[in-house]
Amino acid sequence: MLSALTVVSCNYDEENWIDFTDLSQITEGGFKVFSQKTDDLDKDGIPSDCYVPDGTPLEDYLTQTKATGTSAPIFVQRLLDVAHGSQIVEIAGTYTSVDTHGSPITLSGKVMLPSNGKFKRFIIVSHYTIGSNAEAPSNCFSLEGVLVPLGYCIIVPDYLGYGITADMKHPYLALDLTARNCLDMYLAVQPFLKAAGLEPEFDDIMLMGYSQGGANTMGLMRLIETEYADQIKLRRVFAGGGPYDVTATYDQFITTNHAAYPCAVPLVVQGMQVGAGLSLSMDTFSTPLVYEHLDEWFNSKKYTTKQMNKLLGTYTTSDLISAAGLDRTTYEVAELYMAMNQNSIVKREWVPKAPVYMLHSMDDETVDFINAMHARARWSDANIAYNFGHYGGHVPTALRFIYTVKTMLAEEELGL
Image (cartoon, rainbow, N blue to C red; front, side, top):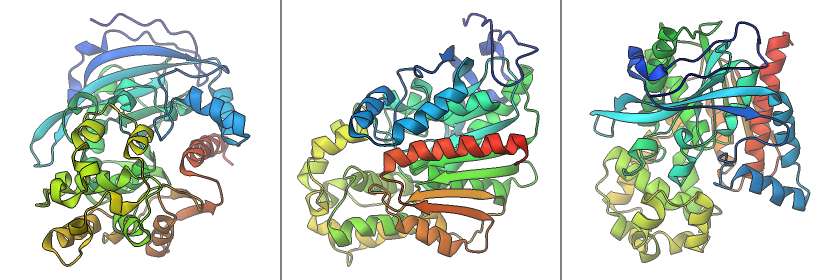
């Protein structure tokens, strides 16, 4: 049984503090708590179980980048300044969604909210690509949690294949499935918190995601706008560094015979195989370097993506994909491309309606800038504010993205 929490402070409306009772007794919504704790944030850092998008612990990343003189620590310090003196309640739990076959499955994720129980809105966060299960939101402190002190409740699903389903293969970039899994968590958490007396000030919500999460955020936006428009109001959407065109991303690997983020190559192929039920065999589609180590390096969930890349030890695509996998005249390869097209949000017959802020670095070595160009071309008439610039690599741009979202949320509060 979870013990009661006595709250002490939060930046957003510090009056009327709430004692969190044993939330595990609440059954509404189907969200079931399995862990709960309070984190104190201060200028010296955030919890040690916080990671940047390549799986490096944030503390280690800051030490490394300070030594090289990059600007990344500046963005983190500004985020920590906002969080100084606040407390965040983290609630990890399970909910029911669907698997790759459409059958019911129990998934997990985390809810993060101010310790006084007061918040303006929900933000559904789709997390970036992870490798180890230690990075699953239910097992760590998601970096986006630094937005909570501004007065928001953050909902961060683990995705199928992480958290309590870590023993299953992750259907990487399976657009519709992952969007559904994320929405189902919100649909479970909202009535759960309401039953606990915790409701937002406003009934519209926001979406946010970077990298894999950027693409999934747009997929989730599509799901809400096409199937839940009468139930869920979207106030604003933030997407950064996303593979909005999976086919173009994969083509870059093939045509250049180079993969700056090599683990993404087998992750995409296996993700399409698992998510779309393709007939291709990883044994014949991949080189021995990949298929002989697939279960240990990729599916065991022991290794971060940075560690996976080091284990692979190559940036050459043909070292990862076999000759058969490169032959586009075969049915298996054609099937793969059809699946990638189906899971590319820019290839869907849909145009965003709610306001979107989209950031992408033109220097991104992990998710090629071609994704942002295709997004802008496809959605030229949508209400999207594009921010493209030379912001450095994928990881430092993630920190810039979160800091920019923080700034925009603060400006909205001030009516700017």
